[in-house]
Length: 118
Image 1 (tube, helix red, strand yellow):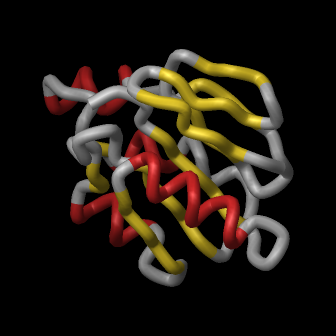
Image 2 (cartoon, one colour; image 1 turned 90 degrees about the vertical axis):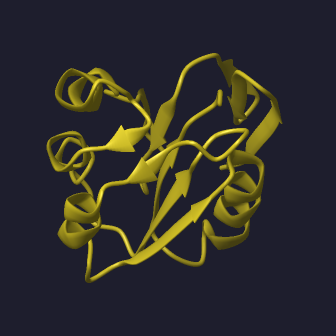
């Protein structure tokens, strides 16, 4: 599995380009981030609410990588971080998060949540 962040608003996974936030599971499955769950409750999709995060805890993982966006606006709420307290959590701007994902995939089970815009 290979991720690329060519720039604001786009992420490429195994050569396929997505123009929306994505979740990448340890199995390689890719789906659109359900950011509307957090937006309904907090008025912004720049915070990952526990209810949203639970949607992605379908597969076991060792490391959660959160690509916080081009400018780093996305973050886990403290209550969300508590849900994954037993796991390694890495929050980085999306470009660096993609690099870290590529470095760890194949060595660990990685769950990635990537914000592709701000």
